[in-house]
Length: 84
Image 1: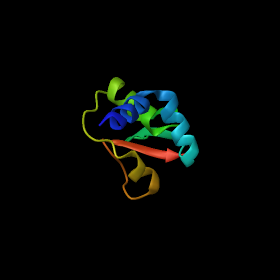
Image 2: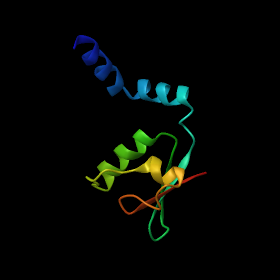
Image 3: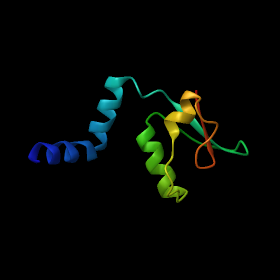
Image 4: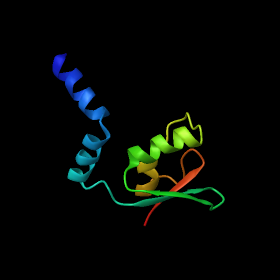
């Protein structure tokens, strides 16, 4: 239980999340668009994009960003994600 709590606390740190993503090679920049094609913003990390969208656009549903980026889905939560 103690190790679990330590890992959870470590993962809350944004720098730790960036380092983990960099190590896995999951920091490729991508753009976010609306379904109509309006550009929103560019991000390098999916967790930052998810936090931004939840805060700025009040999206409460699950955002399946990785599925759209990999080509398994066309969109998620009314948004389109494309690698640069």
